[in-house]
Length: 308
Image 1 (cartoon, rainbow, N blue to C red):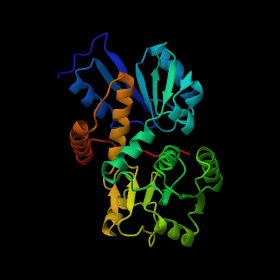
Image 2: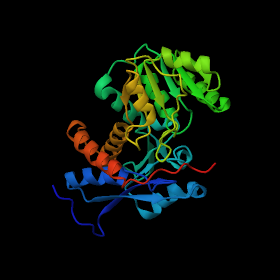
Image 3: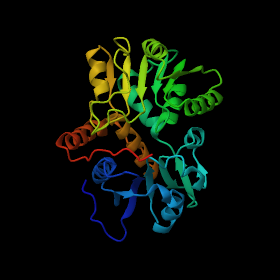
Image 4: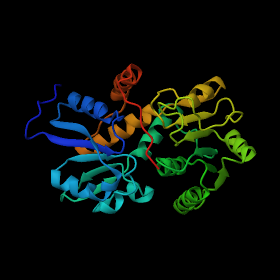
């Protein structure tokens, strides 16, 4: 079905972040919208971090129909919402903004569905009662931790450079899942780091290490690698196969790239905005092909790390 031409009646969806030039979300969403023949257009809005407090006002003023939210705004926009869905409320982060039936701003989170969906595509049910290691405590860490709690992973090892941030996250997820044991591991304690990864059926990278153009970096130091057969998930999707995934595959582990998480959370956001069911199976193959072609052609700009 052909997408209608853009007119004054076309509804606008988009994504905000800083930086945002690297985003594949416009390509992803506009492909689906064209297949649906929906009169929407999806664009990327670069927003400076110091303007974060104005996101809600801009949404209302411009009459937007929906926004995806990426770094560094996922937590800062929470207080600007009129209401939060259960997922956003629990995770304490919003990656999708829409409106309820009365026009009020509603914050939602589809990162949880994106992560679990990517794991469950080929490995459903493997996490229950088994250990998992999360590398990093920023970005999508809250959504990943919550998803692991829902999937029944027990215990969870949280590896991070900054103890205070890891401690904060451990306290939060232990409150959400009182029966869940969370063990903090310092990156500098190589023996504890090695033991955590070795004991885990799944290791997840939520750091930017390995992201283009820093493709020779890995969140796992030399000599530390999960056991053969373990799952290794990298939330980085550019490049599609990071150094972490390459070395994990060579060690006999089962790699999962971040592209499927991006696709599934994007489809979930669009379905939520349009209040419709979007079956994943017919979409994920063509979307993978389209996004991979863009990544491999070099048309997707490298993501710049936010300045500290």
